[in-house]
Length: 157
Image (cartoon, rainbow, N blue to C red; front, side):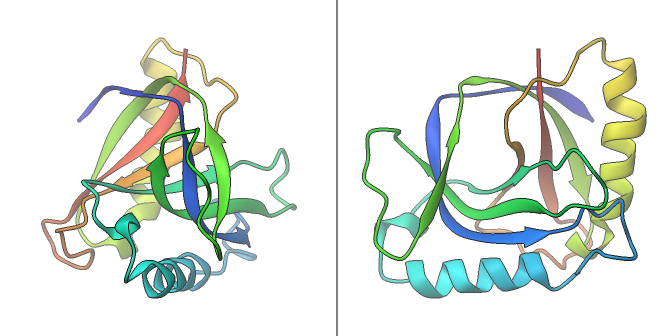
């Protein structure tokens, strides 16, 4: 299933890591993103950051499969809010996102990314816009569950 999701301007505050795209399996480090999330939750455990309806992963795409991209694991806060000590941030501009569901264990996400970018986006009649690509996570769901649901959000116009 896919629909359009509108994201208001904000700042994603969290932990940054550099990683090669999942589409470059020879260089992709499957432990990098889970490690970033573990660090985020460890640092944010006693803060207001974990009291949210959604967690977000933000990818800043590289223009080359041979260069890593930045990935941020965290939450979106108001643009005017201060970045808490120990965290990094990336601006999230207001705009629309093509929202593509991933259902199943998070370890199977590669197939959903393939479908989002190679099948759904080309037939949706939309173009990508320059903005971080997002993943939207439900904080109450178990990522390894067979019925786990999250959203792959592609910035579009």
